Amino acid sequence: MTLAPDATARAARPLITSLIDEATVGAIAGEAWVALVGEEELLVPVPGALPEDALSTWVDVVGPWTGSVVLTAGHGTAVELTRALLAEATPAVLEPEDVTDAFGEIANVVGGNVKAALPGPSTLSLPQVGDAPAVRNPDDVCRVEVLWRGQPLVITVQGALPSTSPQHENPHHENPQHENPHHENPHPNGVSL
Amino acid sequence: MKILVADDSRVMRQIVIRTLRQAGYDDHDIVEAEDGRDAYEKVRTEAPDLVLSDWNMPNMTGLECLQALRSSGSAVPFGFVTSEGSADMRETAADAGALFLIAKPFTEETFRENLDGVLA
Amino acid sequence: MRALVIDDSRAMRRIVTGILGGLGYETRQAGHGQEALDVLHEGWVPDLCTIDWNMPVMDGLQFVNAVRANPAWRPVTLVMVTSESEQSQIVRALAAGAHEYVIKPFTADALRDKLALLGLLPQEAVL
Image (cartoon, rainbow over all chains, first blue to last red; front, top):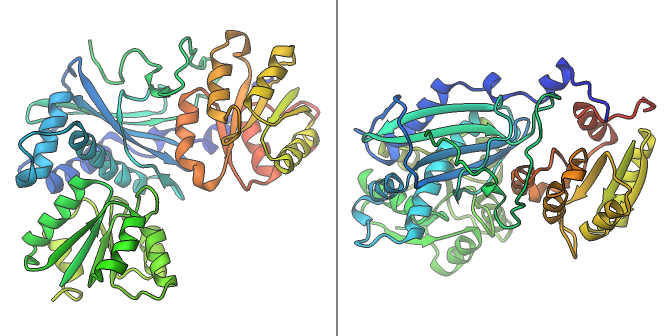
C-alpha cells in the first residue's frame, strides 16, 4: 500500500481541535444544564475521577467532520440527572428507560449545539446510551472534564475516522463485537485510574 | 386550545409541557406523540391548534411529519423544538411551513417570544 | 492494486468497478459479505474493499467485523458505501473498523479524492 498523506489530505479531513475548543464545548454544556436542569446548576471546570460504573451517552455527527459527542458520568450521576430533568414529574421508582431517555436527551441537546458549531451540512443521529465508544484517533479529540454537584462528568467530541498518518495503527479487534461495536475498548473512555 | 407535543424523549416532552406552563400557557389541553408518525396521526384524530415537534425522531422525523401534513392539506400551526438551531435548519423549517424553530436548550422567555402570536 | 467491490446491486457494482478500474485497480466483485469473505479466503486479498451497507446473507457491518477479526487481513482498507438515509450508521461502521465512507450518489472524483486521502491511488492512476 502506498502511503503518502500530505497537508491537503489533512485539511480535507479536519481534526476536531481545529474546529472547536474546550471553552466552546464547556459553554454549550453549561447552557444546556442551566436551561434543562436548573438556573443554579453549574458545571465547574475541575476534573474528577469517574467511578467504575460509568455510563455514557452519545450522538453521532456525520459531515465534513464525522464523529461522536459523548457524555460520560457515574451511573448514580445519570440517575440524579434524570430526577432533576423530570423534576415534579419524577416517578417514585425510576425505570432504566427513564435514565436512558433523560441521559440521551442531554446528549441530544449538547450534541445538537456542538453540531451547529461545526462545518456543515451534517446529520445528527438519535442518541444512544451504553459503554463509551472507543477513541479512534487520539489526535481527533476535544475533551472537557467538569463537576456537577460535585460529581464528575466528561464530555468528549471525538472523531470516528482513523488517522491518515502511517504511524497510527488501526485498532486491532481481537474480539469482534457483532451486536455492540462500541465495546471494543476495555477501558471506557474517560475512566481515570 | 389544544397543543400536540411530539418528541421521542418522554423527559423532553415533560420539559416542554412544564415550560409551557411556566411561560403562562397553563390552561391548554396537551396531547403527546412519541415520533413523527404518531404526531401525524394525532393531528388527524385530535385536531390540535398547534404542534410543537422535535426534529430528530425515529419512524418519521418532525420535518417529514410537517411535509406530510402540508401535502395532505393540513394547515395546522407547526413549530419545531429541537437541539439544532442553525440558520440552515431554520430556513429548511420555514420552507416546509413551520411558524418557528425553538432551539434547545430553551427558556420560558423563548417560548413566550415564539408563541405569543400563536397561542391566546 | 486490488479492489473488491461488494454490493447486492449489480448496477452499483458495475459503476464502482468502472470507477476503480479507471483509476488503475484490478477489481473483483461480490454480491454480499459472505461472497466477499469467500474471495478473501481464496487468497485474493484486496488492498481496498468498497462495501454496501444493506445486503442479504451478510451485511456490510458483519463483513467489516469479520475482516477486522482476522489479523492476516489487517492491511485491507474498508470503505463503506451508504445512502443518505443510512448516514446514522456510518459511525457504527467506523467503530467496527471501517476506515472511510462515501455517500451515494457520489461522483468518480469524490471517490478518487477519498482514496487519495487514504493514500490508496495506484501509481498508474489516470488523471
